[in-house]
Image 1 (tube, rainbow, N blue to C red):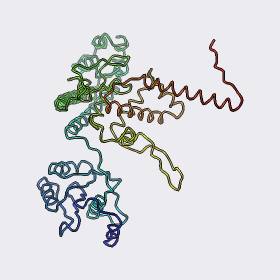
Image 2 (cartoon, rainbow, N blue to C red):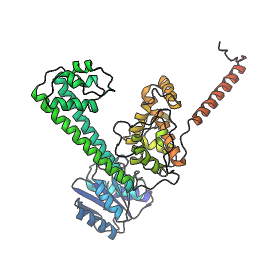
Image 3 (tube, rainbow, N blue to C red):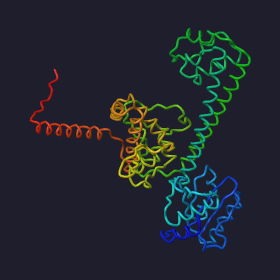
Image 4 (cartoon, rainbow, N blue to C red):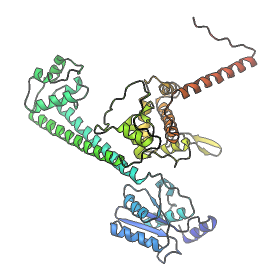
Length: 453
């Protein structure tokens, strides 16, 4: 952008933040721009070493800067963000989509100057970032997700080794990582080859008969496949131990969260029909549901489609306080669960949902998908929309409804009550009936209720 055009823009738009700075972040260097009246050298380059970042903060203080805007570039922004926030600056972490540079030659210098200009005239909005205590739990929880994915890779390697030896164990057991599966795998690696002796290691609750399991364990035990099976099983158990260590650290961090003012001493009884059962990948070293209730003040697991892991994802990504969002619609928009209408020339181009990569949105979509066979209002809502719009649209709409329910529960601290939806359904049916009677009267007809024989 030329100086002439920049001067013309400055004359058109009023400067709302004269003490603003713009930062363009890279892996090895950082470019910072301030207004030309704050320093004779308004654009400077700093290395990403901690000493240089502290020097950057001191230079901004000498320039009288109070607020800083930067792009969310990978994880490179985190050290500088934390240093500037600790030094007392008001930091705006902005979406790269909103700070696209003007056409022309793109450089780091022009990028930081463009960010500084947009921020000074008030055209940038800071992205949502929860408090530091929530960010600490979020980092641990995301690391835990990575460990679960790596453990799942080893499970697939074990299944591959079994397939190559024509051992159909993973077809007769629900999971080879359960108690019976690990007993059999340990015995195979210890040298046991008798199918009947291996089948006797199954737990009594295994649905497959011992004869079926024994037939599945007749295979070609080759040394190379046994070696890969041994390493894969050791890798799986290693990551399971890592996950348990992370769970203990997460519990320690969650104890630092403040207790909700309306939380009772004991966890209230669930309102769901089915008793609570620990789901896959849920921490076993502590009661996650109890800790979530202590923090939220309500039991989100009472909502159909929301498990303890989903509620933990909401806590890690958003936190217990949703006052940052002005209403449920804004919260749903941030999650990308509502249509974004694009209008040009008075015509609606499309009304699709935005492509948002949000972990809460993914968790709520999975929860909505699990309501396919649910015997409740939300299950009926999902099936009705599936017949009308199709499955993808039904998942999005149901996730949107779950978002509004979660927002209402967390802001009002009221327990989930499905009778509210049933009352609304009856009111909608009554209004539809009145509308049909009115239309029939206009056409000279009379509606008569059908008699069920």
